Image 1 (cartoon, rainbow, N blue to C red):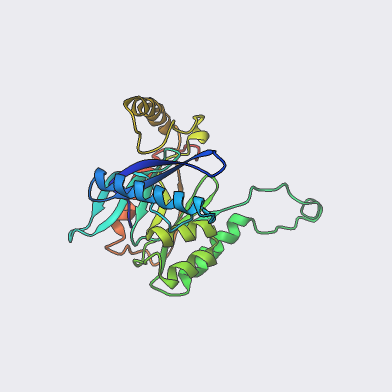
Image 2 (image 1 turned 90 degrees about the vertical axis):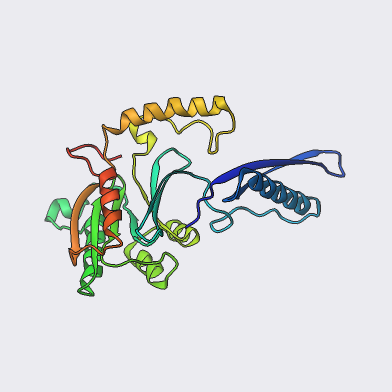
Length: 280
């Protein structure tokens, strides 16, 4: 799990043989210092510029090319000093729990469709996508007596949290389990590349009637920081009117592994409301 402490941006300008000027901007990162991040950014911009001028394709960033550029808000370590989780703020302003070994299973569900003619005429009942996904989770937990998973309803689907044992995001078990239970391929790839499992802790802004935050992290000027703080205050004010999850059930072994229990407590403190609220 890697969320760099320092980020910097560098831009290189070059004039092509046809006289047209091109600007190439890249981000660099470092855990050492802002200066080291600036050197890394400059080196990346130089490499991109050289590739362009030599006629090579620039390609596109993909998962694994670089760590996520997200602001670290909280770091949670165990008693031995190992990082259990990091809470970050993503590009559209929500807080995200990044867990080193607590596997979150993200399952999107299609929108419910009106009952078909057969159902209307003959009362046939086809299982809903939610019921099918819940059955898969329950069957997964039942395959071994020591498996356990907490299941939550989200605005767009289901969220599972494996409570019985730690799992490394790059392990074959993790990849197979996520695929079997219906997680999105991009989520699976991101977990593997970042070496952590991710779960959103706060509502998406547009579900609260807000726009995304202005600019991006890191905010490079005092004015950019001021505008972000104005947005953040509005966002914080809206949070009390929504919940992220609703707890459904715990399937399988009800015991919490000692390494997972702190993550369950941290996650639930953020996402579960004490009263019925719309999910966002």
